[in-house]
Length: 159
Image (cartoon, rainbow, N blue to C red):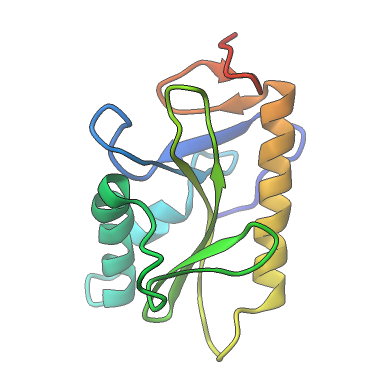
């Protein structure tokens, strides 16, 4: 996935089922070509069980049940409002957004990486922090494109 252009609207892609069918809305930040880490997971080698399990978690379990904080081997908070989904070496960093009034439970996934050592690399957390800040700025400006809606303003008004 390429990084996104800071001069354009921020677009999201839906990872899980639409909110009408699920309790939680799971979205991912997409780049200028409309690609996100979810595309990398979908195109991963089927033998990569970390990737296939992560995709199944984000597409099926999380939309129905939300983040599983009771199992620290699958989900945990990091710092600065950044959290982590885990499956083997695969990690997806994410954050919460209250969303528009009718979508109260929204998870925004920043990016995927494969952990090499014992600690989450600080530059991965920093990348997620920057994407969260950019997301909140775009939302405040009304430049947030959410699947199934028009451009969304901070107060949930549609333009």
